[in-house]
Length: 153
Image (cartoon, rainbow, N blue to C red):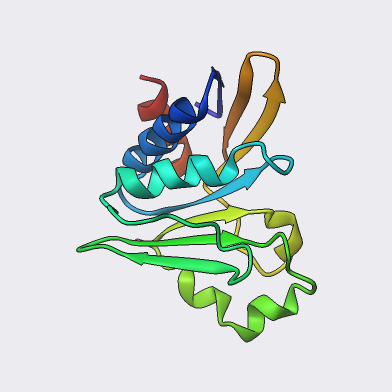
């Protein structure tokens, strides 16, 4: 499966969609999240992170660029590149060290890190629609295709 789409009615649904995707990526993976301000990228990410076992607060890393979540056997890195002025800032922070094969990495505003980020396994586009949010998941790797197959089952 290369792509999958759904409509989410509310914030609770966005968190659940994130949780489901987190569980569908059992061996790590990179997810790019695209959408306008307020579309629900951070809400989706919160569901993803909590679904994998994090019980504390999930905050937007808008000012820190990355928020790490080290769970018992899972490393999750949540990037928000909205305030990134120059992609070279990512190089200075050692961005490549975060993208290990077993890590789960969420990247909001990935276009701001173009050229320094690896290709994602899944690209998620969130669009505000009258019914809530339209989510379009596109798989860009075998890992992403397997995750979408599990997600849509």
